[in-house]
Amino acid sequence: MRSLLRLYLTITLTAVGAFLFIPEVSWAQPVLQVGVGYTAASVMVLGIRRNRVCFPLPWYLFAGGLFTHSTGILVEAVLTRTLNNQASPSLADAFWIALYPMLFVGMALIIRRRSASRDWAALVDASTITTGLGLLCWVFLIHPAVLSSADTMVGRAVVITYPVADVVVLAMLVRLLIRPGSHRSWSFTFMVSSVTAFLVGDVGWAIIYRLGLDSGYIWDHVLDMTLLIAYVLFGAAALHPSVRDVGEETQTTAVARLSPWLLGLLTTASLIAPCLLLVEVYNDQITDGLAIAVSSTALFLLVVTRMAQLLRQVETQARHLRQLARVDELTGLPNRRAWNSDIDDALERARRDRVPLSVAMIDLDHFKLFNDEFGHPTGDRLLKSAAAAWQEELRAVDGMARYGGEEFILFFEGSDADHATEVLIRLQGVTPLGQTFSGGVATWNGDETADALVDRADVALYAAKGGGRNRVVTAESRADLDVAAFTEH
Image 1 (tube, rainbow, N blue to C red):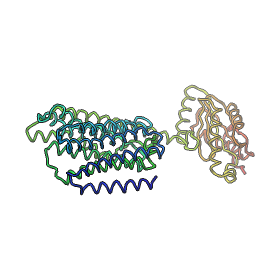
Image 2 (image 1 turned 60 degrees about the horizontal axis):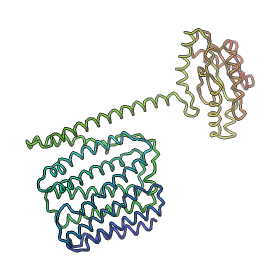
Image 3 (image 1 turned 120 degrees about the horizontal axis):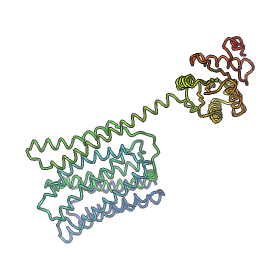
Image 4 (image 1 turned 180 degrees about the vertical axis):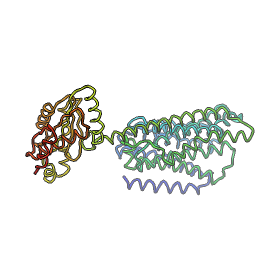
């Protein structure tokens, strides 16, 4: 397929280059234009079938648009060269305008398929840029056509249709380009370049027509070549194997952000309305005051909406960071920092409600040997599965955290040492992979700090490990366990 793509590009781009040297009065000119357009449309159909595009509808629409647009060139050539009919608008305009609905629908379908969910930030950004550029089109292209008395009503409607349709296509194009994390394949790049070439050619012709300029032989050919390049690029987009990915959902966790180029575009679009107003005030002739006011209001609301979205994004990220700071990445349990906060709250409730509270520290037995024998990934899976199994056995009011390494710490609200010991023995029975742990339990005496309580549980843990592991030791007092704590082997 790639060899066919190279052959297609070689032939069509050679034809486009030759177009510059064909005399305007020659029939070879429209024949070449129509030939390139029909070839591109046919190649698109071939590419859709050969590449087995799973969502072909947008590409068939694009191919249909190329066919009708090329047919418009043929119709215009017959009317002007054979029938000597120079009237404008003509039947050819109907074929040219038919391209736009197919572009609208095709691009909208691709945008919908590529977005897993509604991307409101991208929609607001696209609306902001389109509003600013749409105002330019209104002031310089659409409004003069509305006021023109030289054209008939139908003629004015046709002239207005082109810039209005270009603004809508531009909105679609911007929406495609500013999606965060969007996959940019060769086919996607060809498609976007083709639409851009159509817009450049249309705007060029619209400016020449509206200002009544004599474009001359060279510029006429350059603008026609721009449209031919648009044909060629659309055909290349469908022939490239990556066309299969263009209409597929883009899986991304990227967050919409204001990159420098996007910020520049948004700033420029937002400044268009006040700049136009300044120009009209300077010329002492405000002819587009209402349009400028409506556009300024819309831009202001869009900017405020975007700022609100950014603030919500910052708040969401801040909450996420706070959560990450409190959660152990491997097990999903609270980490030591979160534990220090939770145990203080638990002690305060125990003091207020006058109920017992016990703390337990547990340490997986011979975990380092397990890691050496089975590897660190298996050791990580043991820690994760053990934490999940233990958590299933706890009450909602109990708390557990990863204290560090293979050590875990728990508190049991309303529980004395005996009840806490029973829970640890139950946890022994669900520890995965036949592993065991040593545990130390301490019950709050009503006065000690959280650090002192944890310290007593830690000493009891060392006593359990020193006593042969795979057991639970209760700390009646730190003094009773000082000697046993240092007999670990």
